[in-house]
Length: 235
Image (cartoon, helix red, strand yellow):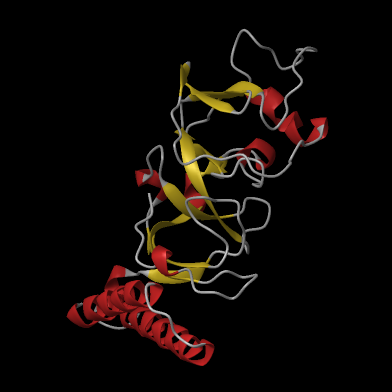
């Protein structure tokens, strides 16, 4: 554990110093490679005995669906957890319902028994508006009516399954009652996220992990290391 801490502290310290230093391109590339190597070694240390018993995994985020909390090109630590212990607001990784070979990462916004809705992009939980400082709406995901047809079965009274006036969109839907043993997940970037609005409720048994910290970050377009993101705690 001490070796891991020293490795991560070194990576963060080097990144902060480098952010203020004017280095030639070749030196910058060497420094980036060195930091990435240290981060990789730290990851390897996590997955070796005796730390293997803690089951900490590492992965890379491929999309911007969780921006601004997480960005495409972030490398993160994930702690395996049981879905039964997930609470509202938790960031989770999970196996997709329609294809269990695929893994996604979203935020739990409602648990079994909750009533949830969205009005003009604002989340309503159990009749109360939710303050979501982490949320943004960048992009365009209007959705089609048939994308949300599954919701009718879970409409909360007085709405009915056959209600002809229920026309949900990505930003206006519900109220829906979350079944027991399930959660409702959303991406922090609401206009760039395929989540429970489209795929339906997520069974807690599909939840596999809890993202904890960013250990490395590189912009996938420019290739530049995002120094300030290294070591960021996720919540």
